[in-house]
Structures are given as C-alpha cells and as structure tokens.
Amino acid sequence: MKHLLIALTTAATLALSGCGFTPMHATTGGQATFSDVALDVGAGKTEQDRAAGFAFAQHMRARIGDSSAPAYTLVVTPQIQRTGLGLTAQDRATRFDRRFIANWQLRDAKTDLLIARGRSEDTTTFTGDRDPYRLASNDDQSMRRITRVVADEVLAEVALAIQDARVKP
Image (cartoon, rainbow, N blue to C red; front, top):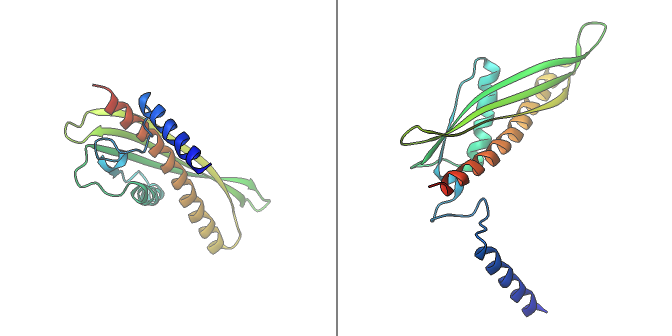
C-alpha cells in the first residue's frame, strides 16, 4: 500500500510539472516570490492613518521579510476610518465600524516602471465600551485585526502580479 501511494504521488507530480503548473509560492530560479519585494508604506494623512500604516507594515514584514536586493518595490498608501453606530440617548456610540483601505502599486525597483496597482479594503466592527480603556483596547485590536486581513489580501494580489510579470517577456 505504501509503495502504491508513493507511485501515485510521483505520477501526479510528474503530470503537474509536465503541464507547466508551478505553485504560486514556489521558488523560481532560486528565488521565492516575495524575496524580491521591498516595502514602502506611506505615512497617510492623519495620525490614525500612520498608526494603521505601521501595523500594516509590521504584518507585511512578518510575512515577506526585508529584501537586501529587491527587484520590485511595493508602495502602499494606508487610510483608516472609524464610524460610530447605534447611538444611545446620550449620543454615545455603542458600536464602531473600522474600515481600512490600502492603495498599492508594484513598481520595478530599478526603472520605477509601474507593474501593477490595486486597492484592498475591509471593514470590522467592535464594541464601543463606556470604559475608555476598554474602548481604546477594542479600537486597537480591531485595527490590528483589519490591517492583518488587508495585508494578506495585498500579498495575494501582489503574488499574482509578480507571477504575471515573470511570465511576460
């Protein structure tokens, strides 16, 4: 049974390699997809944008690391918004929506030629607690959660853009 499983796995691998299939995160020419990418996160317009941009950059660097000789530069402009929902009679919000938008551009590091651009965004909701410390904690947790989600979305789109750029002559 074990030999049959090994034979089937080998046959499937050969069949997939024969059709030109390569996994999105597979190494090509000795380099992984994100090892060629340098990250440049803009400051944004507000203090909240800067805080969200910092959290976003942390998530991105945790995923892709820092490149010593990048072929691409990923330029990201962060924007975050907070909207109060469910007002009480005292005009206090009981819930908040946190929306994070990341406009990004993938550029050739040597020529600054635009390779791809996009926009990723998501929204999360958190409780507007009466206690200011819990409100600040909920707000911070929602920002970290949403920047992580948008960072993953950007990475997926950038991986496809890099793959397309490598395929094109």
